[in-house]
Image (cartoon, rainbow, N blue to C red; front, side):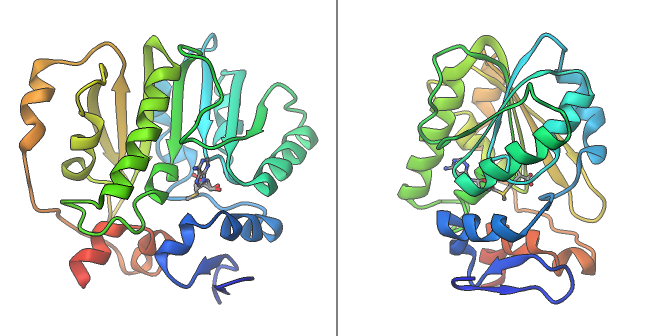
Length: 255
Ligand SMILES: C[S@@+](CC[C@H](N)C(=O)[O-])C[C@H]1O[C@@H](n2cnc3c(N)ncnc32)[C@H](O)[C@@H]1O
């Protein structure tokens, strides 16, 4: 695989540096051989949080599905109108094959860029992503002051998500990104969504953000300038996990 190496223990392929995660070729090569890799945690760890925000009548868009089982789990939880997108054509082909083999014909899988979503305004009740937005941050520099290129991409993504959500729609973002880094972006002027979050996980907490369109409050605006030092508490095995490389806040704190 170009520019990567195979982990001895887990068999997955990681790029030599975190910025490799921004390279579409990296993902294509990885998905050719990798059947399943669940970034962060699998559905069972945050199912209780997701269930509060889904309904069988909802149309759902998943951003950057990779080879995750998130869409199948949502389907099992009663949501049948699901569209998955990924930038990687290999991920898309393999996801289609897998869903077909599982008899899940209703889930649509499209090759698309989350920075340029090919959907009409107000198409979805729920947009969900797990670890996909984090890809944009891998070379963001100082997490307190991410570089302008990163911010531009993140804003393109968020503006697209805001646009394709129905007026009362919800965006769920499951991420390593801590509130003091994500809130300034989520709460940018122009977005009408409220911003709430839950944490889950054991040693290190992952964040489950819930952004509800049309529910922006003055209170969420007022918290815009809060700045807290990140608190990190991880188990040794988590430090060895590939997810660790992916977390730019830690990279910066270590350097
Ligand atoms: C860290 S993985 C997360 C995969 C999956 N969501 C999970 O939880 O296991 C990031 C995924 O985002 C995809 N991706 C990266 N940039 C993208 C973009 N601009 N638009 C759509 N998908 C993208 C990658 O191909 C990869 O499948």
